[in-house]
Length: 132
Image (cartoon, rainbow, N blue to C red; front, top):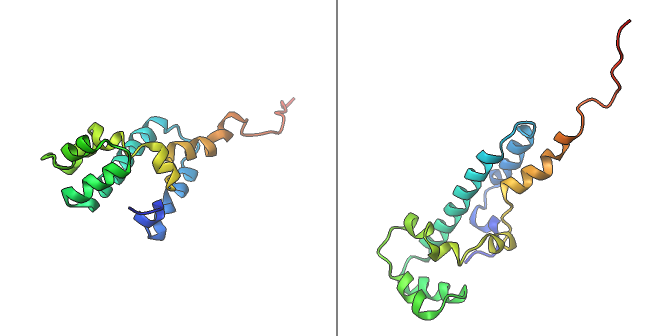
């Protein structure tokens, strides 16, 4: 299992989402980022599940993540496809958002909230003068 998020996506262009969020920080995109973030987390989980490949490795990794042995055996031998597994409780309960944060994944929505804090401040700090 990769140690950090940058190990999964080693190319430098990955940090480009920050530039995108900085560019669109004046727009209201909370709902869109929420959906995009959930899809991205599912995609990361899918990459991990696909990387484990064989049922024996899946079982061992699920055991390492704290799943009881019997349940890990059942889940590792599931006949569902990878995307269905990712959206079921199998991966959602084992690879949680806290684990992803610990490994280096920064949520796009959280970064957007840090950047868009400036929206509450007035755009112009200079007092408006009326022309007489």
